[in-house]
Length: 394
Image 1: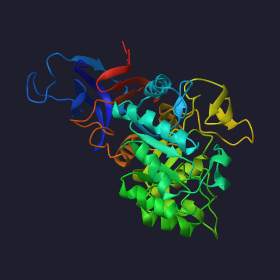
Image 2 (image 1 turned 135 degrees about the vertical axis):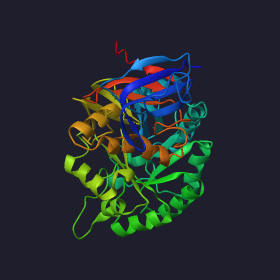
Image 3 (image 1 turned 180 degrees about the horizontal axis):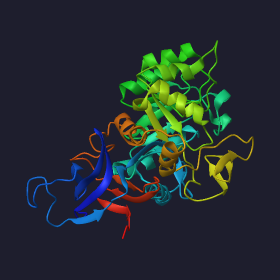
Image 4 (image 1 turned 30 degrees about the horizontal axis):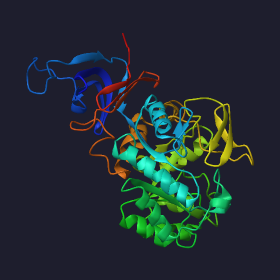
């Protein structure tokens, strides 16, 4: 059991708002108190356990641990092809940057290989190392393939979709589909029936086709704006349909490369803070450095932190970590801190059905939290009550 601790004096972001000079009390792996610092005498109801260590966080922010719905790797390791040890290395890299809950995403491959990968990742999900599996491809449009191997793409046959979710042994969390392809709508219905998120992405769908997919049960837009037709005044395409529908949560990659700030602002304005989920779409180079990498069967060159396919030059995921996404959203995009916390924590946790455990600072939830300095730089990470990054604040 992790020792008990009191994190005191911070600006604490709670579901009800920001508390100045607040505190969070952790007992073992759980939060037992979150709110204003108490004024009652020591030993009164609500005071910290006697064996706690107090960390003075004056001048800092205290927010929930980040939840990443869409992540292909990091720390030089790939979720799409790495060994168990390599996957865990990637997971640890993102924990060092505040992501205490991560879904491992695959890329397009042959069906046998994807089923094998699902089996490996599902074991890690069952152990609690990751929060499940996201299949991005092979059921996507060749017109909008991005960094996916075109020869391995296929239509979303519901029987093949079912094979992948069965291979994940109950740990499949999301499947990205081009729902306009043959079998797309039936596959959305299948996923909804099995409690798996159907995400519209890498799509060439029209506005009307996107509406049909949402009505069938699709609830997520995979990296909105990217790998889909642009918003048009006569043919609004999928972007308009996804932004306007209250049933849809839109993923955004806030790295300054994938989206212009005006596009980010447009998404928040039309979807509202309650329907945005920041993701990394990270690949191996996240938290590691420039160089040559493999993303599935495709070679990627990372230069100045931007990942592009060696052949063709398409953007190939990102090198983003969620602490950078947070800092950029507040300091450059000028979004309210509460909205950024919703996009990084509460909204993705709700989508995953994990909001009873993670996504906010509330008693009874996992002690997953991030400490940020006054400039929103990461200073500490706690996961299930144990320090991943010790704040060492003196």
